[in-house]
Image 1 (cartoon, one colour):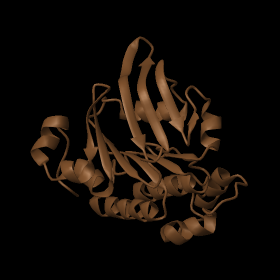
Image 2: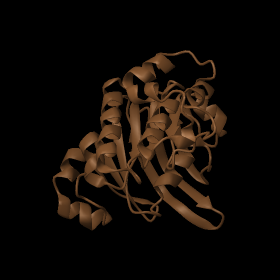
Image 3: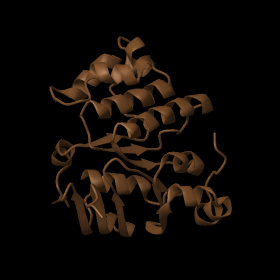
Image 4: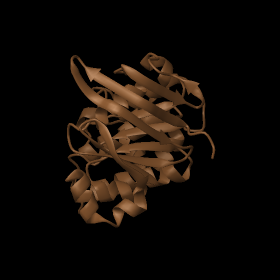
Length: 239
């Protein structure tokens, strides 16, 4: 079996005196989509922040592309090729769509150029001159994805992409993620809508109170809605 692109082994992360992640181990392979599921407060976003170096772990190791990156600063981890689409999008609202992309690209060379992002996300091309603060929620989510792509990541961390979006817009966002999967970008996907995430993912993990309580093929979990409810208490109706 080939070495995973990303591996967390025995990760424990604290916020002050509160232990948020407890002995978390997971992997993401090259070109693989892995869903990370769980209730609010389960530790999903903390897992993302730990990988990115924003909240360093107290215990455990993080390996990326064969290198131990545990407790590396966030800027060094970003340079390795890990992109982030944060919950809430977090963009420069007074800058245009194009300016947000140019700022993220920042002279980086690679396959994902701004013209290629516009090709895959044609709506952004139409809105290139519009300020990000005037975009709809779905348009902002697309911009957040495009902004991450122009950094040319091998791995994309995507946090709650369907949150607060209308069902038809969610379909568009997941169509984009499916297209990215075909291009070989690996994705770690945090999502509350379990069936939506499991339809896209190859494998899935479930977090509960900071611990991994389930791992396995996404297709197997998707067919067992009773198990989804018992494991997570999550929304299981596909949008």
